[in-house]
Amino acid sequence: MSTSQSNPAPGGLRSAVKRKTTADKKAQSTNAMPLSTRSAGAGGSSSTMMKLFTDEAQGLRVDPLVVLFLAVGFIFSVIILHVFAKITGKFTSS
Image (cartoon, rainbow, N blue to C red; front, side):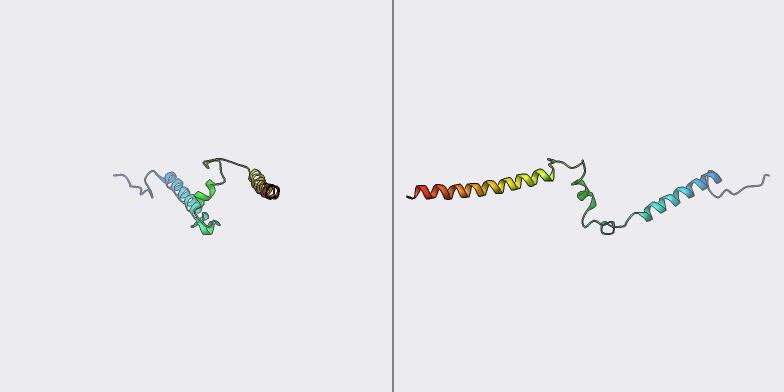
């Protein structure tokens, strides 16, 4: 009969080397990733926090400068209305 060779893994030596390098790469990538969101630098769930600042976020996208101008404009209009009410109140009470 013929002598039997014992292959270390099914598929031969090349397959075994490929599996070993793939397993090593997978182990390195899992070790490189942080285990928790806290160690990643996020206080809460990183998937929901990132959705606020990406194009995947739903809703109206407004520049922060526009929001600032609208808020200041609203405050200014309230002040003007108060002044206008004081001035008209002085003329009507005479």
